[in-house]
Length: 88
Image (cartoon, rainbow, N blue to C red; front, side, top):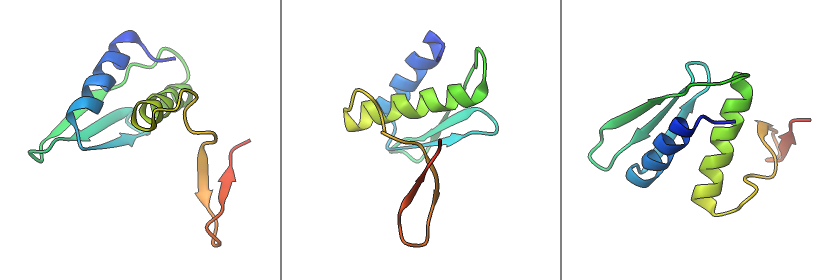
C-alpha cells in the first residue's frame, strides 16, 4: 500500500515526465522531463518494501495503459525464446 503522499507525487511525476525509472534498492522513482532534467521521489514504505514497489508498478501501469488491474503478472526474467517467466 502506498502512502497518500507517495500516490500524489507519483501522479504528478506521471503527468510531467516522458520516462520513469524505479530503483528498487534505494526505493526511489526517477522521472525524466522533456528538458532532460530528473525529478526524484523517495518512497516512504509503511511495511514491506517489496509490496511498495509492486504498488508503484501497479499504479504506473494502470495510469499509463489505462487498465484497472495493472499488469497481469510481474516479470521475473526473460527466457531465451522470448517467453515470460511468472513469479508465483
